[in-house]
Length: 353
Image (tube, rainbow, N blue to C red; front, side, top):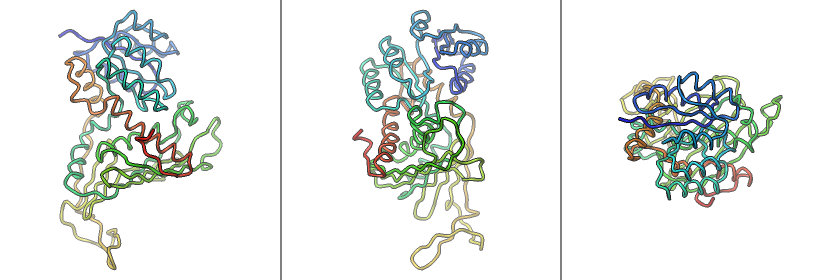
């Protein structure tokens, strides 16, 4: 089988994440070009890969290398021109999340790619986790009225991240993974109400984004959720970041790319240490020793990248779990949250953006 030619645009941290995967696909691809405005970074990638030429101009790279596919791994504000030129040349493409910061740009790219019938994918590797199917089974077999979703952490080192105008803020740039999984599990969002808070992060130079945001979500299927996310914490003692799916007599706790714990599947004996929730005028003990645990196996990102590459080779994109068009729907979800914050918590419908 003839190998397909692959190029990479953006040789930063996330580009390095993908490069580590590419180096395991020697049977499928030839890495022919690496492009970055900081040419030294592109040179480091080529050296590590042991193949490929380096560029600072992606058009020159396209002219000389004629790639079959490209991975675009750039900061959120840079999207637009590169994707349009990629589509014009008929190159299949993978774009890291978030795919843009403005719906107009994302919709235009989506429509242009569809017109050329290009194979596309986005960087929502969490959909490829082995925890996803048991989680989907839990939701399919149990009515889930409420979901509690949280992601808390510190401030990433990328200089552009701390400026909301460049990153979109934590909800758009990081917690978008959680939001994408909620869409994957529950379907489309009807409306969101979000509020942001500042003043908890102090002493950061060039910092201009929300330290904390809280969102109420109503899905079109009736499920409701809350999403809390913050970048003010110093270590893991501050919060247990997870997604809890609450059914009537069971719950599932998903720690993304780590574990899925399902409570209530097995009989349990309540103890004085058991948690409880109020039911009418009584208490209901939380399942303690009735837990069923699933553990993450392997690298979901490795599967995500290979799925796109194999789709380009075969021409069959049916196994891709997050196409560019689908990623645009997740973008609308998180940008609706930002818009609601701007409106002081007023409801916003993603499909109205």
